[in-house]
Image 1 (cartoon, helix red, strand yellow):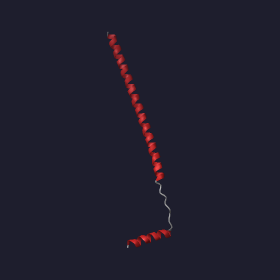
Image 2 (cartoon, one colour):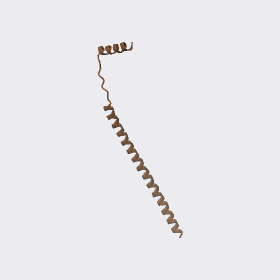
Image 3 (spheres, one colour):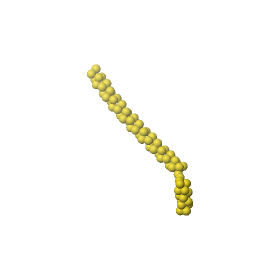
Image 4 (cartoon, one colour):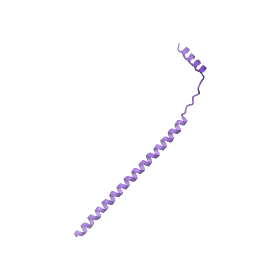
Length: 80
């Protein structure tokens, strides 16, 4: 009977060790999945940001000195 208790305790210890190994592996897999998801979301964000930047790109047409002078005169005259 004493041998059975020792055998049961050994199995119980081995089962506990297996459960710990399985739990650690599950945690590792979960961490890897989270990292992959975060990496994918970061890439999607960067891609969307690039597309938004291209859509919202403002083109400036440089005006001549004479045109600038006219605009300033109109603005100055309008404020008086």
